[in-house]
Amino acid sequence: MRGRSAADIAPLALIALAGIAAAQGYPEKPIRVLTTATGGPNDQEIVRVLQRAETKERLSSYGIEAIPGTPEEFAATIRSEMARMDKVIRESRLRE
Image 1 (spheres, rainbow, N blue to C red):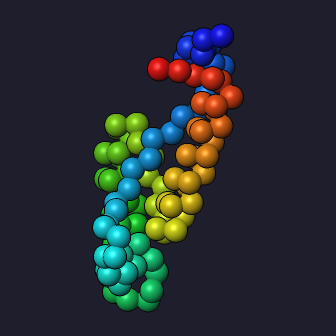
Image 2: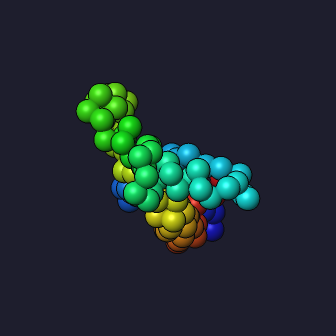
Image 3: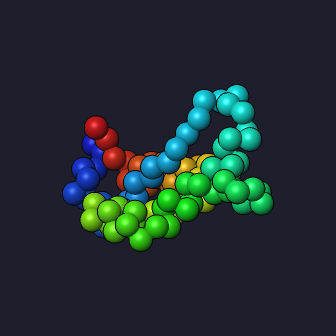
């Protein structure tokens, strides 16, 4: 039996993920300053920018909702989505 086409699959929730990444081995301190509350004056710079009204409006105009988080949360979301979509593809027997 041939695999199913995309049209055969029930409606499916898909998300697109975007984030800021650094090469493996990149120093952790600058990443933490940008993403995590450490008590310093430059804490969570990325979060601050994403929470500005003008940033939210601009992203929203493109259909984007920013959900800032820690690098660990982003990695967990990526792993979770990969596992979810792997299951969908395997169970649907979707083929090229």
